[in-house]
Length: 156
Image (cartoon, rainbow, N blue to C red; front, side, top):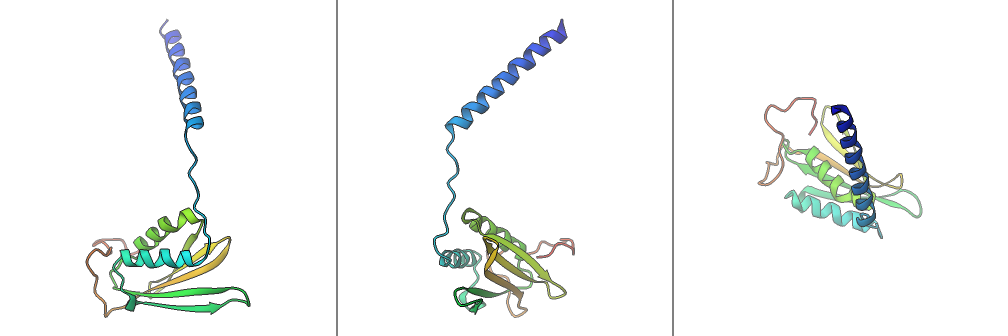
């Protein structure tokens, strides 16, 4: 008798969950994907993110590399304090660029621990950020830092 009651309860719960799932499917609006109109939007997002991290303009150097007769790529070299969290910058850039279908992929060069961040759009690199430690700089207020006791295999 108890097992029959459980079966009925499970059927009712399944029916209720199917009804709610269908209701949500019909009544929710899809997330609108932002469109990348011009590659200068990527530059603006990079600049705004670096400003949010209190990285001054004198720590940033931008140069353009001609890839072919039609396309050129901008390369940013960013100098940061040695205990600046490069991983946090990578994550924040990813969050800013994801709605525009820009995929940031990072590589780290050892032993210098410099991060090279390539920004891909349609499987083509449009921008590159080279984030280097500068021992003459000190960590500014509101900048992310490497936490004490952080494992050595966690690259920042």
